[in-house]
Image 1 (cartoon, rainbow, N blue to C red):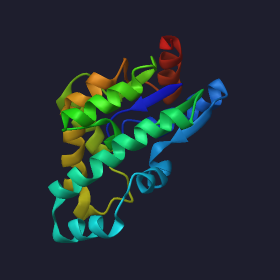
Image 2: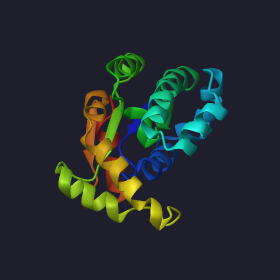
Image 3: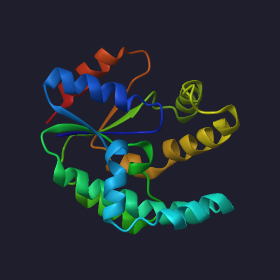
Image 4: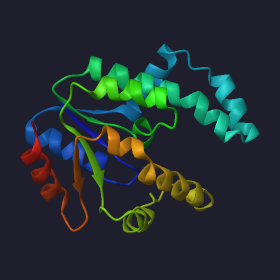
Length: 184
């Protein structure tokens, strides 16, 4: 199993698809599976909607993160011998208890790969900010930038990763070659 983690725009989906083809493995995107896992763990859509509409983003994050931890625990049980592309938030936890749960879930897997453009935080953020998807409305760019800054600077990704691969200056194929060369 290869698990790809990292901030938004780091290349998890691109690299996940390429690794899947190259290694003839199923490609699983946690962002596509998460809703079923969230519902299994008691997701209350109405409560989430109320928090979102009231602007209670801290409350929403506190409500959301246990669901994300649960989805990580479930996906590694439900899928094996595959490439799993975590969404950016599925590897960042402010709550130490949730982080420990995710560490425990990922402990048996040696190929947890953190994708980052560069080892330099400021340069990484500059690069990622240039990669804001076209479908993100202009009025949401500051939220995207702020979230990615949190994801890049947070200790969780670095503690969960067993391998870090820097992508800047490399083609997606070269990045895949590097990952394949580091597989255990």
